[in-house]
Length: 99
Image 1 (cartoon, helix red, strand yellow):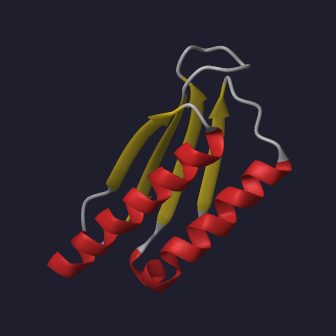
Image 2 (cartoon, one colour):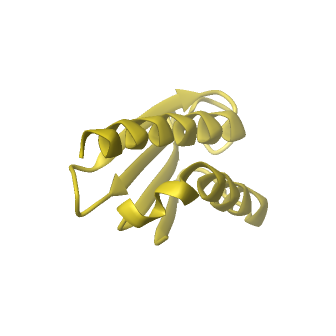
Image 3 (tube, rainbow, N blue to C red):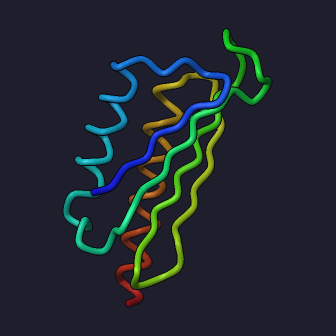
């Protein structure tokens, strides 16, 4: 699974990147054959490095159907990542069921 992780105005340490990789593997491993790439952008809504809402944008690409794009905003960085990945997984399951 090709995964591109980017951040804007948020410091992503190794622990956060490892968390993202692990959560994606758990949530999407059984659908991996349908996925050509995953892009995740983590940003601070206020543009402030400390505090404020965090945005997680996930784009899952596939050759079989239109991209799945999920955006979520929450106060907690790990919570917004987990929630966005969960929503993306559910959306992907629905798309695969329609193919």
